[in-house]
Amino acid sequence: MQSDWIDTFLDLAETRSFNRSAERLGLTQSTVSGRIAALEAELGARLFTRSRAGTDLTTEGLKFLPHARAIRHAHAEARAAVTPLGEAAIHIRLGIQSDLAPPLVGPWMEGLRSRLPDASFYLEPDFSAQMCRDLATGALDFAILYTPHPGPDLHFTTLGEARYRLISSDTDRIADLDPRRAIRANFAPAFEMAHRAALPRMAEAPVAAGQTATILSLLARLGGSAYVLEDSAGELLATGRFRFVTDAPVIGQPVHAATHLKNRTKPLYRTLMRAAQAVLAKV
Image (cartoon, rainbow, N blue to C red; front, side, top):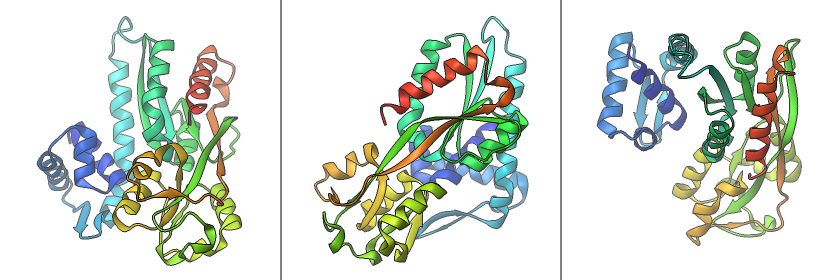
């Protein structure tokens, strides 16, 4: 079972699009399809189904997903274990909230590489609950996440907040929104509560999603309205087809740094914190 098969599977599980995964991985669509086919043949199970609505994990694919993540973690650990100390004295395993990954991973890694030039990094976008579990078991060293899941071995620090704004292809006023053409965003429990309080009619939306990149893709195809990360809306706004709903409230989603309790006083943790604070200030 090759590591590039696992990487391709995990990326496709996130994008749910062979075309999008091919673009993100710098591959042809046929290569992505070939890797998935090879992995399915190795496992003797179908992992994805394709339809006009998109690509979805099968039941077997959902069962394999946590194992694929564990395999990637183990592969990263194995590589770190045999890396000569002169090449990378520190190996740091990082997690980041899935919805923050597209705008933040590049600037974050740039900041980390400038602060820790001799370190190597493993970075994985994920959701808060899984990252908290990985921090507790030592599979991650540090994470930027939305929802702290308190545990006796975890330490959390508030970094700030991510700003979400409502955009629409139909109107710039709340009163004219059509719930039937809305996409209900659900990025975290705190966000969902604020969303319901601000726009209770949006609870009737026929489609819901938990990632800005997915919502932007749906809006581009279907039109309608949805909350998205403010700084990620630029491409749709630039088309002239979409606009901000000016009287809709901005929803601020708290963002936290997390680490294992034993690491909270280490100089390395403070360095990771400073890099995270610097990049979040730009969101």
